[in-house]
Image (tube, rainbow, N blue to C red; front, side):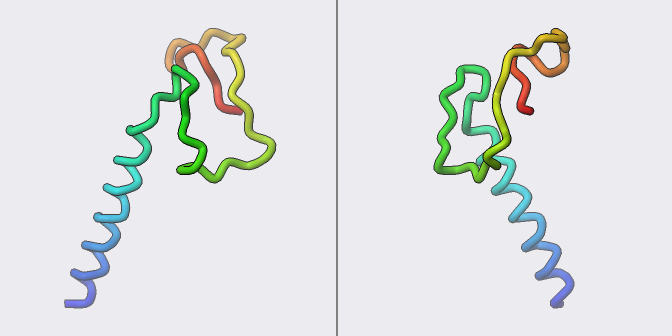
Amino acid sequence: MRYAICIMLILCAGTVSAEILFQDDFESGSIDAAKWDAQGTWIIEDNADNHEVLGKKVLD
């Protein structure tokens, strides 16, 4: 029984994280900073190599 509870908690936590991720529009640059705990070294910069998969901006 406790294993089933642990598995359910893990699945629920993963679902909540995914919902928060898809609420922000990263391409427009209007990110709600209150949701994210970004490091001081992270920056969003233009994609100089033009990776098709990554879009127009790259998180470095």
